[in-house]
Amino acid sequence: GSNSAADQEQQVGFNHDGLHYFPLGHGRGRGSRRGLLVLNHEYTDASQIYSAALGSAITPDALGMEKVAKALAGHGVTVVEVRRMPDGEWEYVIDSPYNRRITGSTPVAFSGPVSASHLLLVSALVPQPLGTLNNCAHGHTPWGTYLACEENWNGYFGTSDGSWVATPLQARYGVTAGGFGYGWHLASARFDVAQNPNELNRFGWVVEIDTLQPGSTPVKRTALGCIKHEGATVTQSRGRVVVYSGDDENGDYLYKFVGNAPWRALRDDGLSPLDHGTLHVAKFEADGTGTWLPLVHGQSALTAENGFADQADVLIRTRMSADAVGATRLHRPEWVAVNERTDDVYVTLTNGSGNSAPVNSGRDPNPYGHIVRFREEAGDHTRTSFQWEVFLLAGDPTYDAAVPAEQPKFGSPDGVWVDLEGRVWIQTDISNSSQNRPERQYDGIKNNQMLAADPRTGEVRRFLTGPRGCEITGVVTTPDQRTMFVNVQHPGESTTF
Ligand code: FEO
Ligand code: CA
Ligand code: CA
Ligand code: CA
Image 1: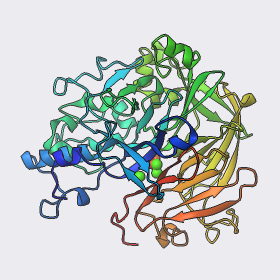
Image 2 (image 1 turned 30 degrees about the vertical axis):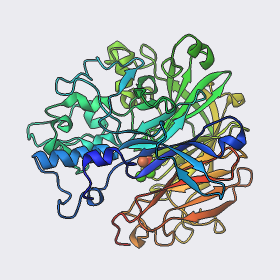
Image 3 (image 1 turned 90 degrees about the horizontal axis):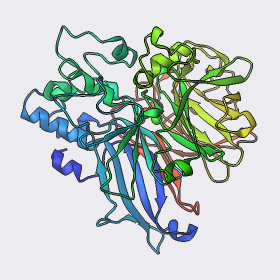
Image 4 (image 1 turned 180 degrees about the horizontal axis):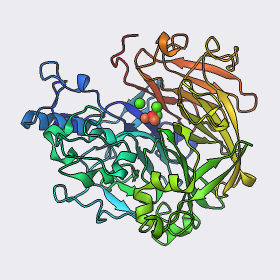
């Protein structure tokens, strides 16, 4: 905890979440011995990144600024080359030219309908947009880049200005004077919503990183919308790229971006496939059908007379656009996974309350969460109609008779990933305000864990259990499936149970 911000910039960040392995070298064998591990850093624990003598509070002085700088350096993304030694052990390559940290302070670019020069993004205080924050889950593209997602970015902002009042846009995204209590705004005007209000609008995006080009600038791909992006799961149909993304808030929505031309053709023309396409939001009907509603300026409710100025405005206010077209409110949509063999799609709804629609499992409250499976029409991810079902109910049958007694007890599914052979891997994120607590009916479930489900039968088996206070998140294997990497986030974070 006594290391400086400058030290932290040279180190792996905090609280690993999304994770991918990019093989280096051709072939399954070589690619499974050497590769790049790329991981997201969701947040920092002030009680762990600062020494006890310094304390965790942010003060409005140079020491406070150094603490903010260290926290920013603990966020973002890490790229690290790893290799498997002849004895089977893995080690990182300390002098790899690919090793890189992208932090909350790294210069970034904007692309797509919302430019960095948009009136709602410019800042006299911070002219160059900087950094990525609260990188939860992730994605990777067919052209070999990594996607880091910005989730609970609102929590970093605040103000001591008693006259500050949230705009409707700020209120819809949960921006408050106190934020999540980090207090960065006390030392850094960058994070003061009264002094530097447009800084907010630079977050909530999907960030594309070319991990094979260590000098490349991360690019925020605005066509994918501004939400609390849990992840960005990429698949393709008819050569077009499709990106699924949950907005992790109780009552928020599931989105998908569909490219408007084959991605190879766009790249041949020097264009990004993530800049050219249409964002949609999901509507789930009670009868097991569903539709994807396009978020396009001038269509349906997204018109100038309804107050939407242009496509950039539709995207900066993605949540309000989705409200306007009548999307289905969900119980906290988290990761999305695609079975590339069957084209089935899985989305975890980690927990929630209200909106007791069938897609929310019919349980209200729904403290344990569930997994929904859907299939696009004809298995084509670019289509706008689908069929859905509840694949699994999480929970403890002691408290909820709907949960199968033979199923291992688990709650708050968050990570979901389908491996090369179709197994559905499930990772749980019970918060430390619920983990092991009887009054939350979580005492029988124990610590967070990772499980595997059979997609045909729905049988679930537990694979590993994490230490107390942690979340299990992020999973990938080498191409030969002989090594699996799993992130164990915030072990030892404060919990009284
Ligand atoms: Fe960062 Fe939605 O889990
Ligand atoms: Ca998560
Ligand atoms: Ca979560
Ligand atoms: Ca987390």
